[in-house]
Image (cartoon, rainbow, N blue to C red; front, side, top):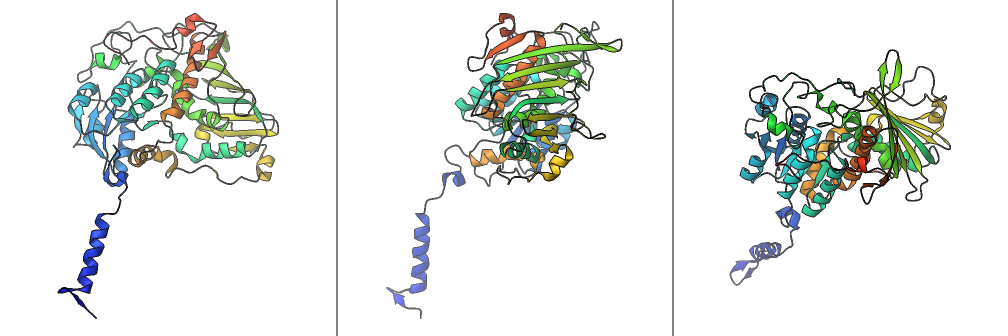
Length: 462
């Protein structure tokens, strides 16, 4: 029956009433993009600084996630040309300051420049209210990492360090197994890498030749906050990691990948001491040597001591690089490799041992009989869609959701500080540096303390 009410059918009246009620329903602010949040339906406008190498790959993943690539910045237009070509609608810059000044539509920025420029670039972006994804090790110095962590809180931006293993399943399994007591209480850990895989050694001198700077490359901007020196192709684009003024060596390259599962599973933060030993291979044997602070050593061993924390006992973490590894466990069967091609970790507990590769990949209890008898605990840590390959997307989705990403600076900052503190020990080897983490101070060595925060070239600052 279609009854009439004041000349209007009941069906029409009910429809109008429903529409009026809907108009007064509360819609969540994040859907509308209120309070500074990005609506999930809107594409983010993403920019990249340093897009010739790893940054180009990061930007590609942001594009594959469906976001808009609106600006690309690189001081070497030839090296970055392939990325410019892949994103023809993005505006191209050679100076990140000009990009920030002119292009106000940017929501988020990927920073993948050499280590020595991470901090000043990221700080400028955060001050401008941009969310940032910064390649590991996030900063060049301990002091920079601390300043970046504090700035992220101050400016309320969504951050991510580019240690993609943090999004992988490997580190989660390591954590779950250790927390479940698979090897008992852990008081000793060893981590190692095959790096450097580039020319590096403390005996290498600064080149004397001064070739012309290639066309399309702004050498002054590439040098950034570091002391000025003449251009040479040994610095850019591939070997800058070896040079103390620009890179952070083997520790900076792989430390944030290999040791992530250690830092997370053992609930580490600040060590109480760190000491480094360095060596060169000379005439068929390893020779103890002193650094010249031009390049990092070919091989090093760094030992961190951590105090009791959250009910866990003190633990010693030893880092090995340049072909050096800890002694092979007696329980490891013949024919089985230690770790993988990038490195590995050996956890030594009072009830067993656990070994894994870089990113915590392929964890196994050793010997194999222990692994076969092991009852795997339930998954208690949320998995990231796509695992390691979903690290950029995790950051992008966090921006839209108004939450922090998996390797945000509250986690990544103290972790990077720990890694970079190892380089301080390498710079001042054969001595035990006592560390006051909260105060960010070497309490027994003023020379080492002077390098906790680097001095910038005129015109550059945080």
